[in-house]
Image (tube, rainbow, N blue to C red):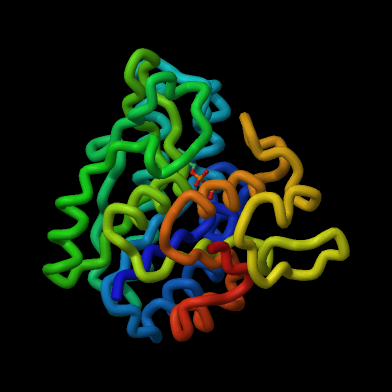
Length: 253
Ligand code: IPE
């Protein structure tokens, strides 16, 4: 069984303070993973106060590109510091976590990548090393990163986009997005149990085309609807349940 799990940047960092890890949250997340027996596991984490802080400072996003090498390294190095902390926390809980860094392994592949919506298929990702690491018993830990974007320089590939690309190419049995909210919420604030098409939740999510103006959830659902594996969006409290049962929070099919 192959699981692709994203840890949202806001779950493991303090988003209000530049480059600040939420140590208790990271430790309890790692502990939940250490207690579980998830089989083949790939972890992807977001940027939180590491990537987003530096990306904002350099005006770089998933659609705004840069050709400045110093901007690329500022964002990538910050993500490397967070990645090292995540890998260390997972190792402390007994997982064979190792870093896999997308700048060296991915390229956006759409004809016009700076205006394309984020989908796993718009990302070329070298999954052979990831597969080989899994076979050797490791837990590859990837992260949202700056990646080459033909014709534009570099743009940000979000953790969600990487999850979608990995889910497709590894034929993941289950996909989880651990976020700060317990799932996709309806107008009354209740968790929607299942989403099987964009229309069903259009009113709640708003228009997810173009940039992520609706706070991130619409874009997440859009990305997850594009992959074959069932995917769950859930909060940190439900991580153990997801690892045990394969579903938690809102399931997107
Ligand atoms: C952002 O990744 C990565 C960079 C800014 C380099 P995500 O968009 O997946 O991060 P979170 O989960 O929202 O923090």
